[in-house]
Image (tube, rainbow over all chains, first blue to last red; front, top):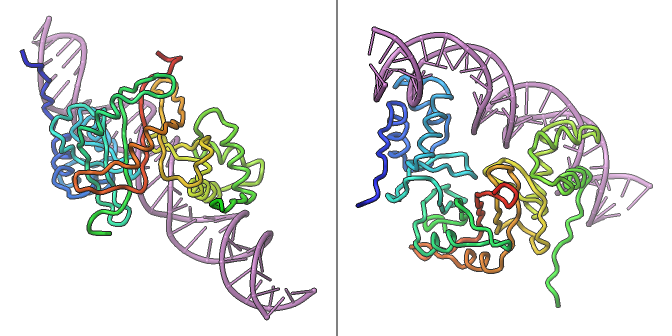
Length: 133
Length: 133
DNA sequence: ATTTAAATTGTTATAATATAACATTATGTA
DNA sequence: TACATAATGTTATATTATAACAATTTAAAT
């Protein structure tokens, strides 16, 4: 029997906001999202942040912590936000999600000096992208 | 000849703020720092943020991005903030800087699918610390 | 010692990011 | 239906961070 994952049917606000982020070629900030969805009836910050929180929780989007911005997850296996890695260009601010089996394996198995393993991580690499080099 | 590193003599505000963070057992937030140094004459946010920016730049402190908080660097080799890793307890919020030669070597040499190497990274692990398990 | 340039500091105001609190409406289920 | 739960709407406010410019200090050059 295959493991079943609950399909998270997105609510109206979640869907509107996810679609917007998903179509964006770059990470979107909360107030930029707000501005873009006001025509659809989402008028106040809490509505945006609530949807963002939920979307992050179920792994549909990720927060780029160093930029306070959000991108859609393109890593189809990612149902929960627990192991994320990104590359960030310090010039054009392009952000790409890294999916490297080697990297995730290494980090998922990483133990610190006390032998402690961690359930979750977020890694952000910085440098120059191809275009900006 | 040994490589010489410029000694960054801290300015008054930088020293006051570094001392406070260095003595703190936990990451400090900017406005908590501000509150704590007002008796020493540092009265406004820009004074705090300027010192923080400089201290981060020269590697004396690190910013914990997921917490918007700052901790002193206890990794003596760390003169520039370019390769940082932390463990964060999701219950008590204890933060520890990880210094693992293996980890830093792995990440410093990591190449993405396009063969791109990165000059800088920040890694945050989340889990439960010993006490909280 | 005096002048100059650069860095640092001081100050006010405001921008940007995020949440608290509570009222209302919609949805699913007993 | 009636009840519980989740989602939404709304106002206000908390938190984090920077812009802009004036004043002062420091270091170096003359």
